[in-house]
Amino acid sequence: MDDLKLNNIQQHWDTLITSAISWAPRIFTAVVSALLIYLIGSWMIRMIKKLAAKGFKKRNMEASLQHFLLNIINWALNILLFIVVVTQLGVQTSAFVAMIGAAGLAVGLALQGSLTNFAGGILILLLKPFKIGDFISTNSGVSGTVQAIDIFHTKLVTPQNHLIVIPNGVVSNNSITNFTQLGTRRTALDIGVAYDADLKKTKDILMGVIKNNQHALTDPAPQVVVTTLGDSAINLSIRVSSSTENFWKMNEELIIDCKDALDKAGIGIPFPQRDVHVYNKQLI
Image (cartoon, rainbow, N blue to C red; front, side, top):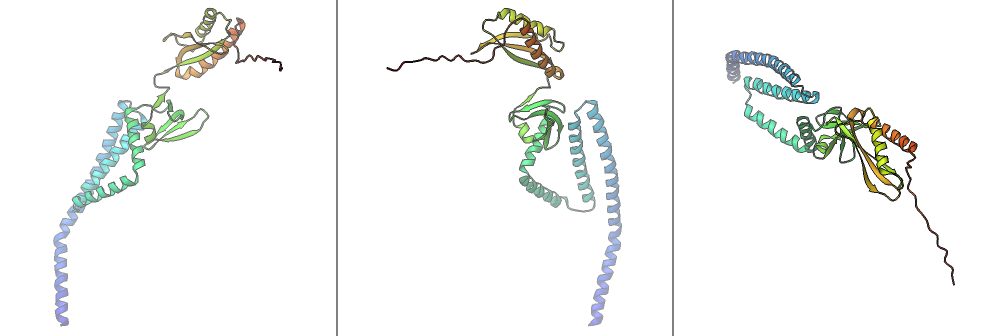
């Protein structure tokens, strides 16, 4: 009985050795070919990324969009290379693809908010409603200079030097005011003068101040218009365009120079006031 067991073990061992010897060349060939595919594929991925980067730079593509697209290309090509290498080793790709699909569905359901921000980041980078360095304002009241456009968030720096991080899903699904993109901004500075002021003379004085300002543009033409008859003053609006970088400097200079010019001309700028009439009634 013991001899029979030993014979069976010997037969199984001989069969295993024979199978290993017969399969060894195939396994060796598969491993070597998979390694070669990996090495050649990795080299090709690097070359493709370099060519893509050169193409993006020739088109003067924005740095954030370049970085994003290169990451997408890198991930897509590496995943494709991994599938090819695994297939060469004899793994069934159908089950592998099904597993990736199930994992992707689970991750997608768990990260719905992040995927919304991801999609918003793609829309921002492709449609370019703003770019790094632009001063923008959202309908939620947040405003600042764009410091970075990441895949999931946009970073703004406020004039008070505060860093604000906004989810891209919120930015892409709401209205945005871009103060920088057109290259110029137009001020609407309101000034009130007394009711006894000569309005034609006042308009000429204010227009003279505008013409003497070095930052004021002549195209489109500046305007000084009477807008409303207020409770305490007649209101005029000064409408002048300037380059984006000189806008705030021009706005401040116009306020100072307009007040000085009106003071020198004896034209008052009244403050809100109220007349109170007191009636003394005699009681009978």
